[in-house]
Length: 530
Image (cartoon, helix red, strand yellow):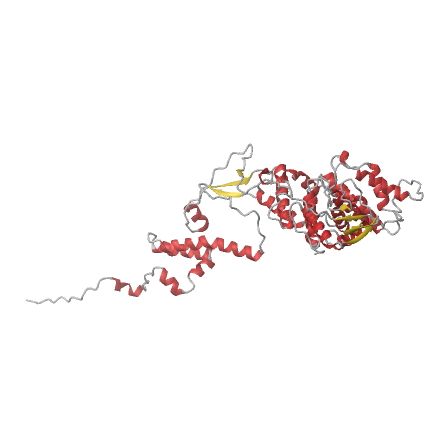
């Protein structure tokens, strides 16, 4: 049970809260304690509660071994305030939980939280439908050039060129799709990013997890393309960036001991003051870097951390939704935290806490938090920030699959098309994406698509009874010279050819030509003399 991962879904923090309370109440040993010459059954001391809950949280995958004893104490104080526990006299709320021999007990009533009503975001209508390929317009005529007359190729013209009459060819026009605007590109990125995120999270819907009105496609496009060589977001408005003195302080710590570019005097404890300067800036931000609107999204990702690749892809997608200034600050902060933890030349930044633990505790609530300050915010943010710090080099990469599918869709929309007069072809059901095939398959499709009408043409010549036999044979010979493969496929043997074509009358030799005249019997005349 301690290793159970709470499933994804909306309001996961509430599920974790209730699950933690159930485990705590069901597993904490209760016994008789004495205080002020009185005995109290089914009670526990504050120190016993801290020991048990700390071990429980560290063994639970939803929180992990990064949980400190101080964080456990803070959670027990929230338990006391929420009347999950009470002191031995029944007091709670305003009392402060103490990590000592003070006695506490469980109240008889259930302290579990009820789930709030799930908001629906489906009717927001903000997620745009992907632009279709049938949104086209005719190509405009170029200026100062007379419009070309539509070509209608008759059988006579075709016969002159190919020696085969196939009938009329319909008039056709070259058309193209409407110009794709910047706003439409933003909407495509928004729609496809949300679809990919929903798939990775394993949810049937993002209702209650992500409100589409809080997703800005322009932010996504900026985070994808406006980056420097190292992948850090570049801001167009420098006023939205961090102050220069904060950036200098972060560089100083990240590159210690070679980061003191200003040559300031390095006194004992200088590095601690620099860290405090950076921490003060981030702790005074109006909201966490991951924003309040995306809180449920990132809490859902916590349960995916057992599958590292899936969790990384989910973070890649969700961090694209951040406003560019937030994404830039988060990138620089996580890189700083990772370098500080890995720098063996940096002196200890705290006498009692390890550098890694200090960095996570100091900045976790600056990264993730809810607007109403959920009871497990600190533990959840610790878990998430630890993972993000360990994988900061990959979580800010744009998923290759998302990028390629968006580019394929945009390329598909920009393709031109030939439309024939009177055609009522409906392109609304056209596929959204094109599938790349091998060269051999492409050649086979080209041959098949060309031979089919030629085979029909050949059959039409054979079946034409009004065409004189002499002209038919002449055109079939022309067809054979032009398209030998089609001809030989239709007439593989002389027998098949003889069965389909009219026989030619045999030509007689000159010395036998008299046989063609009607035979007249020889009549001899006799004369008698008188």
